[in-house]
Image (cartoon, rainbow, N blue to C red; front, side):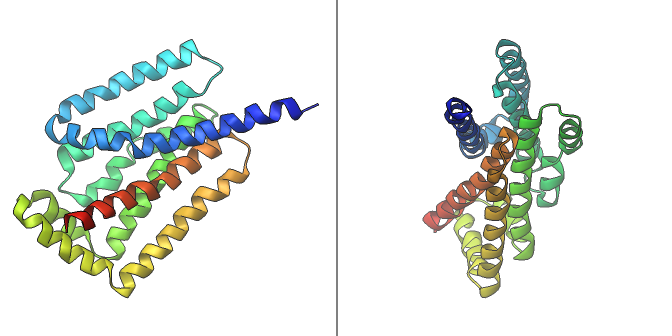
Length: 221
């Protein structure tokens, strides 16, 4: 009797997973140049995302699209604030990214916006693990230098940073944190809820964003 519902449910999970991956890995390439040259506009677009989330929730109350956009809006807000005004202060990165953490925790505990807040938490976990790599390998000074350096000095700074990454300690930390991301991203896929699959998509797509970032670094070198 349950067989006819199996395929649509699985499709919904994969759709939620795919959209979570998309929202982590693609908009960042739009926001990065936007927030550098027009930070106020990027910040104001958060309001547009809130309106879109409200409209989707009102127009399609049985769907999860508005919920997901609402969760994404918190990540967009944090990115606009940090990369617009605080990008040369790496110690402020994670606290600003966690700006909506109390709201997300409250929402999940009270059953409100679980899909969107799960996306935000997954994105935040990925950010925290990536930042953890910078701390463990002492790359924070290079972060500061690269942000404020003139273009002709960037390759020198990146070369020194890569040299630290290629040490046994740097490679070991990378493998450890990749394994942690894979574990945190794959385990929730065993659960049937869309919120769990959205969380997984947000966590696992962090590997894609990080991989593209470091690939671009090697390309510059």
